[in-house]
Length: 113
Figure 1 (cartoon, rainbow, N blue to C red):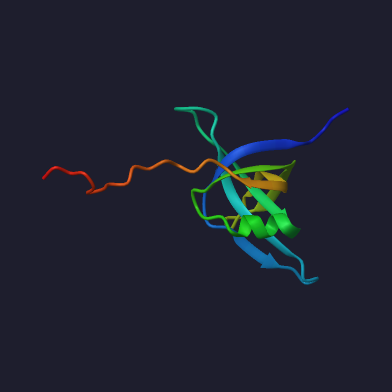
Figure 2: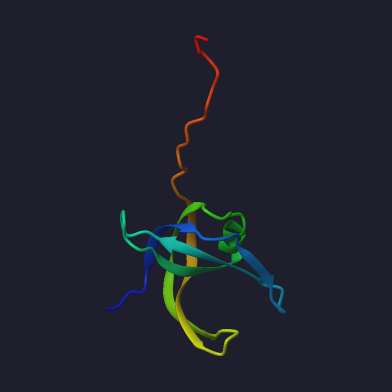
């Protein structure tokens, strides 16, 4: 039996875009990079969320680390140049925040001078 179920940790490549469709349902889309290790090219996918997941995706910002699960599909579209493009879309069914980067904060505490 074939299961189309993917769980990945990724980083958002831009701020999300939310659209409300004619029926009142909202969809949020955002690009995300899946890193395959140091010095390797990232795999870029589009994330698409509906319902409660849509609300979570809408709160992300460019560069956020998130963990998402869902089903993967191939999407195709014509670019503004008329060329047919293809890409991967993950229909997100589960969402959680990923690891936050640890950044050193400069401080003047306990500085002897």
